[in-house]
Length: 236
Image 1 (cartoon, rainbow, N blue to C red):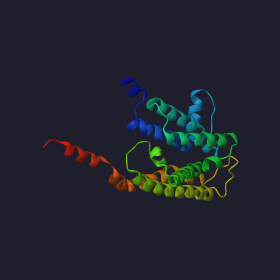
Image 2 (image 1 turned 60 degrees about the horizontal axis):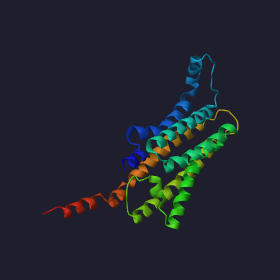
Image 3 (image 1 turned 180 degrees about the horizontal axis):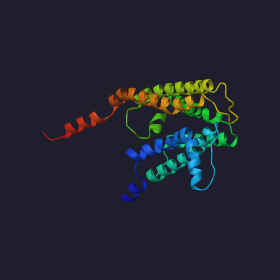
Image 4 (image 1 turned 135 degrees about the vertical axis):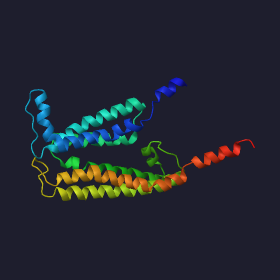
């Protein structure tokens, strides 16, 4: 029994979970916004003359984001002794679209990544509603426990929310990059606006939306029922 418990690993919490969730994103942001300044310094450490041309920041950021995500993924699997469903799905999409971005030297694929991720989640959740399967519970990965009816209500909300984000990203990147050469390396003034929206805007919106779900989650959490059950069983 003890061996089985050890093999199951431990769930990531606190700083470790924050590092896995936000570490690759931090690498992306540093590479994108500070890459041109840091490249000469990094090259000088090994006697090389490195520089990042205007418009090439996205390719550098994607090129560093992918191995950072891979490291975070491997650490998560090693620590928890399992594969987190949402991390796996995101990892596959990042790997495919990031590789296409670098190989074909076309930023369009990475601009569309949030659209594809959100659209995929919407499709999966909608399929779960139709087939009466609780896919959202799998995505939340045991974060909390609720009755099936509460999960169905939450699933509908998230399906709509992800659909809205998918449409919002598609509109945003096409608007910001409307006058840009996506297949080339020319600088695009609107690209920074999209990066800020993707990293900060969508993250804040997601946190606010999740916060608004707290009353529903708290209402159906079994904690109070468990405590009342223990009270009834206590000796008088």
